Image 1 (cartoon, one colour):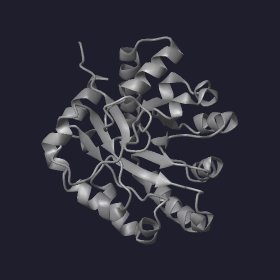
Image 2 (cartoon, helix red, strand yellow):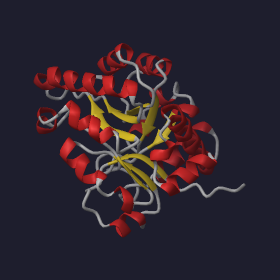
Image 3 (cartoon, helix red, strand yellow):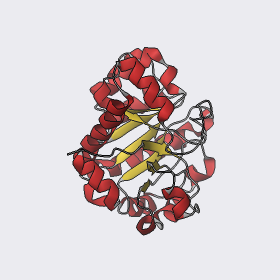
Image 4 (cartoon, one colour):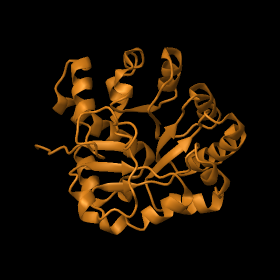
Length: 257
């Protein structure tokens, strides 16, 4: 059977108030990461209206207000409504916030141990500490977003079962990509930040530059890269048992993979 594989963007930031037709007209399957419980709750109200978008539940580690307003019970309620968690993690730019970040991430990982979800994890300046948390509280479905770890950290992440989402900025880190197997790769824009240097249009779902770069690196076609990304996503969906939580059109594509 021939499958029409649309672009797959597993981490982008989109205003939850976007018009449904505008989002559909991007012609891509997009996993939309959210930064706070409040934003996540607003986004998840859209679920019946978006055919190709998967809205996530997130608490961004770089946002003080999101961390301070985190509630385990509120987050647990959001988990019941989505197959995707994003974005969560640690960010060392403001070191004084790290204790609260650790507390929030630990709470979220504990919840994900019993209710696995595809989980997009931020680790800026804290790659090894994120891996320490994943070692202490292992989960299924971990995707290291815009990964900046060195070779040893990357090998450790692979041993932990993590996947990696690559954008137009991170695709240039050859020392990392040299050790990531193709079966652990996913693609992202991290719109509006991760695609600042890509060729236009600069919009969620436009992962053409990343596909081209990865195809050249692995010596295969861009179509093969796209199909591989979908198969990798399908493996994550199966591992986390979240197929029935996806929008019906996305569910159909994943089932074909």
